Image (cartoon, rainbow, N blue to C red):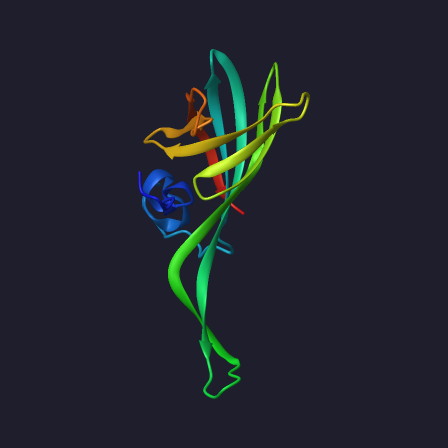
Length: 153
């Protein structure tokens, strides 16, 4: 996997949001009002069904343009084509509830009805997403999630 998380999670390649395919033809969808989307997944967490709701916000990076002189001021800002992906949401099963926040392909999970905390890595797959728990050890485990729905925010 690339060191950068692909825009596939937010849009085109994986789920056809933001007018990049998918759908049944006809008029193109309206222009997106933001770079944010919400995804709902059905997950199999070791044989336990869970629902994960994830908000993803793609924030573009930019660079400053400096004016001349010994004490220059910023005279402009220009996008550099890269993005940072912020994730947040919940994972809920009959036995546990977690909230999470993350950046790019990693997120930190916190158990809401207990004291567990751990890091996960998101891996985009054709049907949805794989969650790799404790990607740096000890003993990483993986759980698969299938996309149920998605929408622009």
